[in-house]
Length: 424
Ligand SMILES: NC(=O)c1ccc[n+]([C@@H]2O[C@H](COP(=O)([O-])OP(=O)(O)OC[C@H]3O[C@@H](n4cnc5c(N)ncnc54)[C@H](O)[C@@H]3O)[C@@H](O)[C@H]2O)c1
Picture 1 (cartoon, rainbow, N blue to C red):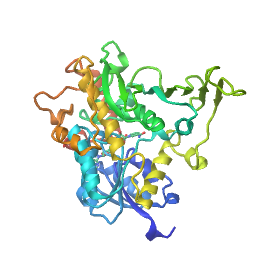
Picture 2 (cartoon, rainbow, N blue to C red):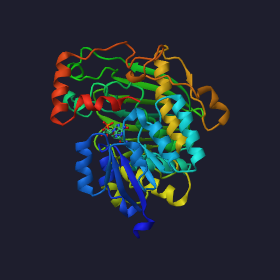
Picture 3 (cartoon, protein in one colour):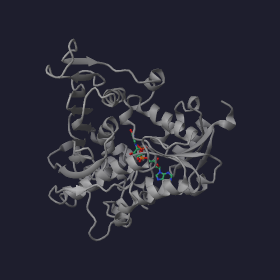
Picture 4 (tube, protein in one colour):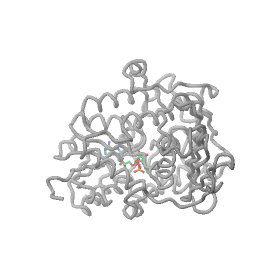
């Protein structure tokens, strides 16, 4: 493809963002032209390696001649960055989470609508091969009506790694509440079944003072959560995620004609499809266990991270820009799955009572939330705003702080200089 027809892309955040920057995006018609990060050493090193312009200032970066921006900056700051980019006339692909408050969700949706630009929510877990296959079977009508689903993203980490990927005491990974990182567990269920969340009940597994590994981290939030989500077709979903022991990610979809789930034992990329003897067609097996292929681009997808999910987010972003059609993972789905995490925390702090998930596709539902800035960010704390743990204030151990600071210094992270970027 001639250079001028390429979609020129700039990436913000050279951690996770370096995957996009280094990835094979050119075959998809995208070309990296600029990078932005406040961590100058890392930024300059990647800029030199890839021979592209570098910026430490986001506003200056947005002035670069380019068509689209990939946001891999801090988890809790995507919405304001996305809104600025849309206003500057750029298409946006945003990492998780789409928004950190209900008000940001409303503002982001309105900014996308006003801009006419593409917004792609880069939730990549739905695009793993077994999730693609479950969607295919479900959409074909093979499984009947969706009744009950489970999505699990369980990610325990040794303390040294946990501290390493969260440089700075105020880094979002050190304080985001247990319910907030919910899109990897809920996203696949929404994608397979085309359902939207309507109500949540959140349950939090509290901070565990007896866990020696956890006590060596500087994280001051809870261990994990379980969110019960009522979907708009009446089905129930259980989404769990966090640092429980037992690493893995699993999806399970019960329908009124059968069950589909990826395997818990052995290769988790294998899919199990079960139909009861009284439901199955003659000659059809009760249980089928197989390794599904990607629906397309198997060779390319296989070379990318997160079970191929990272290929498909790039692919669908480029497709949306080329066709001018908003993608499946649009701003409405991105905001809906992100606010489930916020509302589940509200619920967990209210004895796990039910909270409604507003349908922000409807303009009439937006006014009620347009100023709802409730959030657990220590840098934005106001009276009535929550602490990151349901137990109240958690103090990291002195040993954890000392160990984390050693790790950060060895990485070249300058804590004092960087501290201001964790804030609004
Ligand atoms: N979808 C996935 O599988 C997946 C995997 C990893 C991370 N993520 C997401 O990617 C995002 C980035 O995560 P990460 O792992 O790279 O860690 P991170 O959040 O520490 O990295 C953010 C990067 O953005 C930079 N940054 C922060 N504020 C900035 C500003 N104002 N201007 C320019 N740059 C700024 C930081 O210096 C850092 O390099 C997070 O939102 C995370 O949730 C998604």
